[in-house]
Amino acid sequence: MPCSEAAGPADYASGGPGGSAGPGATAGGGPGGEAADGQGRGGVPARAGRPGRGLTAYLLHPRPDAWAKASLAPACFILGAISTGAFAGWARFLILWLVFELLIYPARYQWNDVRGIDADRRHPEGRARSRLPAGGTAQARRHSIRLSAATAALRIVVALIIGAAIGLLRPVLLLTGAVFVIAGCYEYLRALPARRSRVPATAQAVAVWLAVGLGYLVRGGLGLASARLAWTGVAMVAGLACVAAFGIMFVLLTWALEATSYCEAGADGWHARPDLAGKPHLAVLLRHLRVPVRRAGAGPVPDGSCADEPVLRPGARMTAPWNLALAGAGAFGTIEGLALARPAHDGAGWYVVVAALALAGAGLLAQCRGQRPRWVVTAGWAVVLVAAALPARPALPVLTGLPWLVIGGVYTGFCGWSYRDLLGMGSGQGERKVPGHR
Image (cartoon, rainbow, N blue to C red; front, side, top):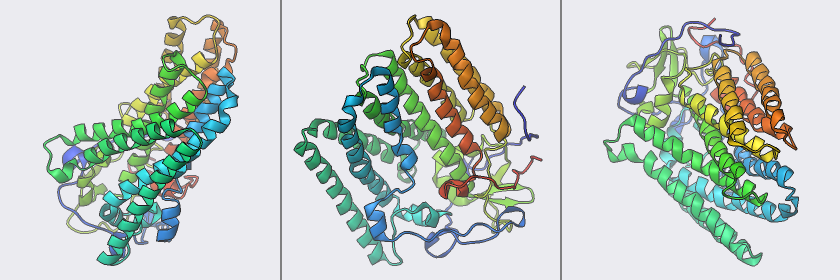
């Protein structure tokens, strides 16, 4: 029986390719494609977009909201060092992490924003997303692009100079190369619709999702390797698989919420805006939500944007991509946790047992229909995993359940947010309900 706090019948419908609206492109909102304030659902006013940042602020810190991603490497380092006792490498790790998060990865973000400058201006929540400011004229747009490209190049040069100056040039080069090779694959896959590719929308979307996970793998590898874990060990291999699956889950949950900003609410359900057709990696996610989504009509839908809806709260299909990623992250994370716990009985059977239990916990969590049951399952299943590992006599048994606790906590947090809550890092305490649920 699934956990239930508020559940009801679910309808599924799709529009154009991959469950998106039909072809075409419209830019909604205020001037320059920025989101305008308006009515929310149920007569509730939509939250006003926060003022966009200036160009100088952007160039100094392109992604102020990326702190959660940046915390992944330190979390992996601390977890690994607790097991290995290799805290002596903290200074080296700290320098590499700062170079990575303040110089290398911001340059990658700037590349992404330069390529997507026009699409970001048309985004329904463009102002709140705080991407590269484009200005109001073609000259201002070119100025922003040139400055951002120059700043990104300078970041990479500074990163390499720092690496050479302190004897860490090789790892800095490896990190830089890994980030931009992955970024190149990602940007190529994202550009396929513009190239009139014959690749099916769903296949392209899955390839984009997998490419996204590789960026998290680099962050996790930095932390785990700095804790002196052997590259061929169970803890390292399972840990890398865990952070890749966790990254896919994290991004898919974000994108599922973002897809709602391209939807408008009507009396007969939700209507996808035509410009969603150009974002298949978002559009295909709508089919997994417990919301009827139809083609956009000829004119605007009066009830307003769905970006205020905590659309994940009532749950989704068990086969939703983020639920599959949750299962993978939970299983590999629990194997990693047991390996780091240093069990006295280190046989493959123990890893199979805890992985199977983690998969069961992921299935139970995915079936929950409310936040309270989700938090109960997240906390309770961590205890179950620790208890299941005790017969293997681990030296640090609590480490077995710690990855699950983090993964389940992040998943549950996302399920309580709307897209606008996420943009403002709010608590997601809105009182609106998803259509079709009481």
